[in-house]
Image (cartoon, rainbow, N blue to C red; front, side):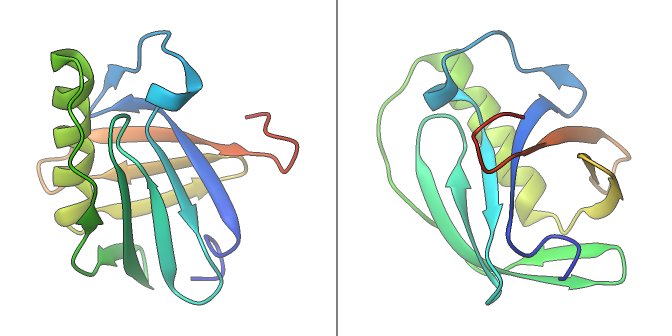
Length: 119
């Protein structure tokens, strides 16, 4: 967990599909806390869970999410994010880039958000 603990990551693409230029509030994001908690947004709804990193396998506990309405494109991207997180992806960290790979081999890329809010 040390590689992820205390960091925030913003999705650049989900399953290889770029996150189109969207307002920051509509961009999926993950924040990993030091105590094994994770929270974030799928782009529409907020969520919270626990996480465990075992080797390169990232698993999440049950996700608690809000249930707000959103535009279809954002909701579709959010579903893909939540499916990715529910599927115990593998993790690759290379500096400020985090790659989550699902069981089908589809990669999602995230960029570290610096404390000043810049990714």
